[in-house]
Image 1: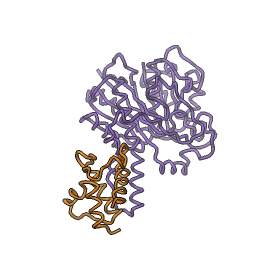
Image 2: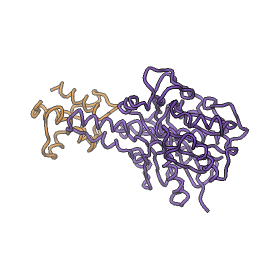
Image 3: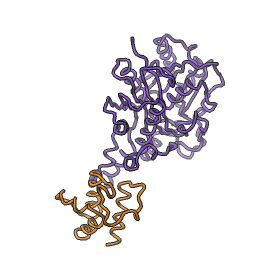
Length: 354
Length: 85
């Protein structure tokens, strides 16, 4: 019999205070910034100053989020670490490339180069945990986190691992952010207030963060939810999404009426919001619809924040008001569907169940 | 010489991101590696780049590094004697 995958621990560092809080009770929507910065935890509580001095914030956030998830799951070791990241350690990549240009390809220092690779986060977590097992990093744009999830689910189903740390992490880099403003991926400066749900302008409100989860093959007292299924589709037209969802649900013997809440990736980009709007106003008009990128900002692994949010909802059975798109409520939340895409590409469907 | 020592301490703190250490915390004769400041081999590479980039000194014999990078005192003395900029 195929082993099931349970979410037994969660940890999230984001542009909200998602640590030392219950569930988004201190969340604030920032309409004034087009790039949101993380709320930093007390790194020194998790990483020694000697180790942290070479780490960029993405690495530190990944380490703290993974430590929170492991503490939450009450586990001291895992069999594997699987990370998803869109841009990896972009801060140190920028630093290293800038140093090459500024110094005419001379005087290259090792530190920023060492920390600039995409798999730095997974590697540093493994070093700190002394985990010598399977360690893999997926760099697949906006489905990086979902790629990591699929791998983790398969590892558990195939009995390759019993306990896996899986997460998504991305950080903002100043130069990359300025390029994203130039190419329209981020909303233009000085056009506040920035609205994510009712936007009429192009570009997204950007963010950064790290969310990690302990997935295990065993249901425990502290289990948040079961990860039922994950699906990735590279390209879909707006009018194809509904059929893709039907097909995804059907493969799990479910129908739209079985979904107790849907979490959509509205990011403020008016050019692509109909991917979500069509669902919210048609197929899921009678379903509680939630959104989160007004809290987390858009980034390649922002869907890991949605995964964190859905896990919390299934455990607490409460939906924070700040995450609601409509006012529909259910007496019980048993099954949640996550749908995300970025600029019409990298569509992902993730299904969680209580 | 005193100004150079102060300059080196500042450079080391900034370049090596020694967040919790101030210039006053580093004595001129404190060992930079091991029990002193606790620097490691990656830091040694950073120090070699500082010598080259800021003082025009290229270390041709890596064995020299051990005595040069013993302390701020030894670094400053070597730089004073060999700097080209």
